[in-house]
Image (cartoon, rainbow, N blue to C red; front, side):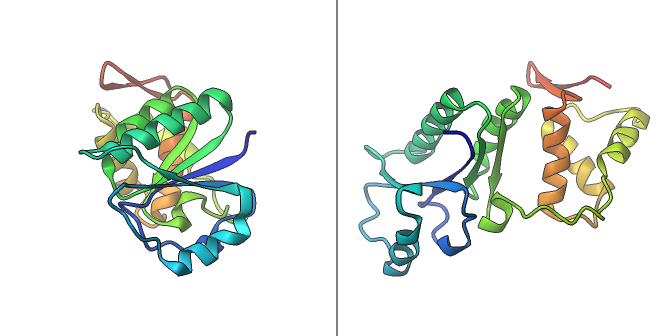
Length: 191
C-alpha cells in the first residue's frame, strides 16, 4: 500500500490535532511503556481515522528506544513500498542523518516538528519555482558546503522569505534529483 505515512514520536510531540491529518495519510503513533495515559481528546480525534491509524507501544525502555522502533517501521515501510512519502513528527534532530540517507537513496522522507510541516499543502501554482535559482547559486559558490547542516544554512540564508517547509522542500529536492549526495559523510555535488 503506497501513499503517505506519518510516524508520530508521541514521547516527543504530544500536542497533536489528528483532525488535521490529510485524508490520504496513514498514521502510526509510537508511545513508550512509561506513558500510561493518552489524552481522551486525542482518542476522540483518532476514531474517525479508523484503520488508517495504528498505536504502537514500544517494547522496553532506554535511550532512543522509541526512536529505534520508528526507524525500524520506517525502513519496513520503505522496503515494502519504496515510493511512500513518509514524515516523522518529532522535534528530535537525531532522525536527521537517517532522513538524509533515505533522501540520498531516492526515498521521500522528512522530519517535521508540527503536523502542518509534515505534509505541507502545496502552494498555488502562481508561486515561483526557486529550485533553478538554488542550482545557479550553488554553481556560483566557490566553497560549497561539505556538510548537510552547512547546506541547509546556505538554503536558509539564500531564501529567508520562504517558510521552513519550503526551504526543506528545496533541500530535499537537491537529493531527490541527485544534484547532491552524501558520500563518506561529505556532500558531493553533481551539477
